[in-house]
Length: 280
View (cartoon, rainbow, N blue to C red):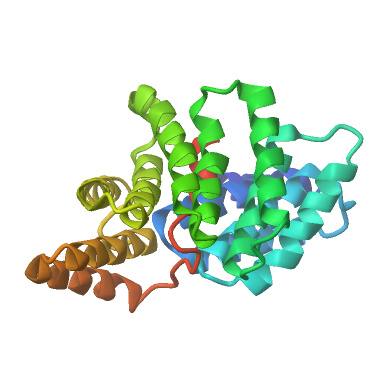
């Protein structure tokens, strides 16, 4: 459908913004399917279509944010950071700022800071701003507010403030569980992967194993058996199994993870980068 739209829109040179928007959606589709190379190509085509627009152009900001999120998924934090900072600056300076887009960009920048080990004080402030913005749009109990909560739990884990990671992670899961029929399975899988890490580091190994197993099952059924994110979830699950003494199962799970990760770019984020676009 997107390819058909592109063929139509290219017949009208005045529809460059619409062409860029179609490329953005096509890129998100490719990224969610795990084809990161095709996603990057689509985003770059979209950026080329709006290259003459001003920095606060909404479509330009969206494309830059999506491309930066792709770089995050590939562990390319150095490439992602300047793009995200540019998007954040443009969104903040806009006469009519898009609160959801700004919240997303703030969170992405926080994730980049965490990946680059810039743990204080910027990421925490960005995540609090993101949470406030999302709650102002959707309310405090909407599933879309859980992304910044889960990333905050990841930040606390990186700080080794493990006990402080439990409350935001469990709060996020309570919201998601209450709305589970309407929440994409891929997002639930990502959240459970965060929960597994939080429980592992706070010594609740049985709950960690349960969450990790459910994360893998949900990811397998939603994003497929070869997606790079599944490789990350499998690797985390294998680590938890090994620490619990289940060496044979851990070995088999790690073999699955290696088969995916050896052929795919993977997230270097530690597992708390959630697929923000999946809840838009």
